[in-house]
Image 1: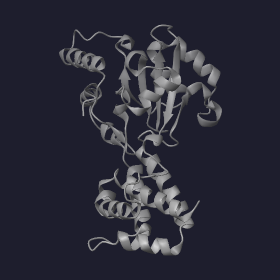
Image 2: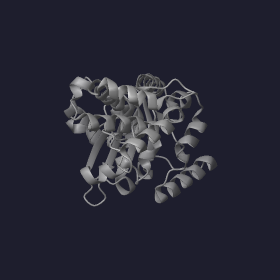
Image 3: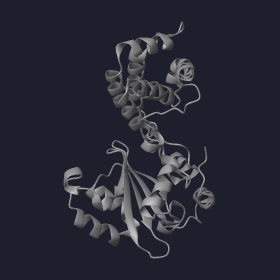
Amino acid sequence: MNNEKTEKQLISLILESSKYSKYLGEKYLPKTKKLFESVFYQEEISSPVKMEDCRNNKLYYFNQVKNKLTELYKQTNKDSIQIINESLASPNFKTSIDTFIKDLSKEINNLKFQNDFDKIDSLNSIIKSTINFSGRNIFVNGFNIQQLLDSSNIIAKELLEKFGANISTDLKLLLFNKSDKEIYFFFERKQTKEKTIIYYNLNDNELDYLQNKDFQTFYGSNKNNFFNDIWKNEKNYSKIIGQYINNNLYEIYRNPSLYEIKFEDNLYKDFAFQKREEQIKKQRIVK
């Protein structure tokens, strides 16, 4: 890679990634934007790592940015590094490529400890139900779990395009495995009644059919037994997941057809259920 291309990618990477952090943005965005425009004029930003390619998974994205930035830093000659550092210098902050990498590492560390489920677990069952039914944002490592119910979300689009699974019409259940940071989508095709489970792992940004996972290696259980049991127990998907994979689960969404009880006897639940049905029809998340 020639030096100019390396410089452009390095500057683009700092510029683009700074947009996804208030802390990094305040410290690096103005200077980096000015530097890019002065060197590359009207050219487009060419960041080698893009948030959309990381499925809006902020922790995974920042880790990829750090890895690529470190690689580009080593490939850039010292004179170019010095010029970039001088351009990033600010009277208000001590700023350079080195400080950006350090600040990015701090951001990554902060995201590692972000887990709204730690707060939710301490709440009583009524408040938990309110959070679940209202569709309030739930963040884990910078990733908004509730956004998965929005059909315009990047993962929802990929589920439809790659797997033919429609969030709006085919989703039966959405579970979050809090221990392994893994999400399970239970789908039943409306037309064919075909059932399938797709998982998304936050740690490695992997989206695939659960049947493609090595159960023995990752979960220490038998895959064939799991799938035999799961399809025989439609009302108890969570219980089967708990037996074979992990029981530290949070139910994000359940299709009304999977509810075993009616809510006529409980005014609160009846109202919440009605509100949730309205939300399902609109297929939009309450921000």
